Amino acid sequence: MIIREEQQQALAESMQKDFEDRMVVHLRSGFAEEVKDRDELNLREFIQRGIDKAFFYGITIEADVSRFIEYMICYGERFDTNKNVEWVQPPLNSEKLNGTEKMDAIDRLNYIALYY
Image (cartoon, rainbow, N blue to C red; front, side, top):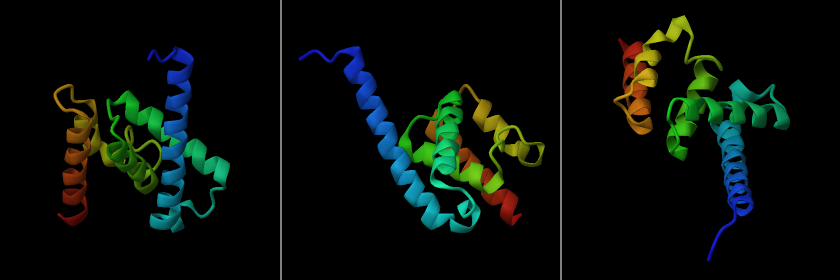
């Protein structure tokens, strides 16, 4: 069976929409206060920007993209370039780490920043 490019594109769009749907529910339940002022369209656009930004850094696995978007919620949409959280920049810009390793490193550094 041969999958045409149009079919691949439709499948990718469907998968992204499914991810967006799950992220909307996740953010509304786990980050209700932070997203309370965002309507459906605004929240979806935010999630789409998060997906694009995560991909830019080589973060492509759904669970890692989800964590990336959570950091956008907690530290601001531009947390990846924000001087107040500059500790995220070395892992994000590392060419030696894959996407999961980048997010794991950020999780560890976030823990240190919060508790030490």
